[in-house]
Image 1 (cartoon, rainbow, N blue to C red):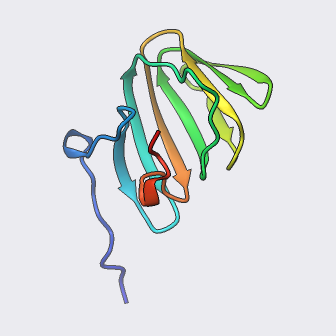
Image 2: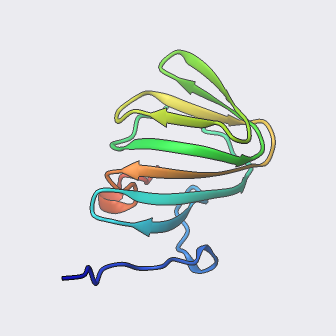
Amino acid sequence: MHDATVTKVSSARSPTGVMGQKYLASGVRLAMRLWEEEPHDDEEITAREYETVGYVIRGRAELELEGQLLKLEPGDCWVVPHGARHRYRILEPFTAVEATAPPAHVHGRDEE
């Protein structure tokens, strides 16, 4: 029996979230989102109800995570554990793809 739930998502037609993120493919336990030429910083430290893994495509940023400062550049990956206190500072227009588990856009998890 094959899985009929397989879908293709075009980022050109993806919905956009309140922080400017594009929501890409989403499953029951995992979802992807895209940040394109992201100019904004997180002014306040936040903690989210999901885990995030990300990959930098273009630009540079700093991630303050539980007292650590990580510099993110093209080719770098990062993890923000569920509930970890963090914030981003964008140093250059930033493009990255992230996976969130559980999906960030479900049940208001991604709202500011």
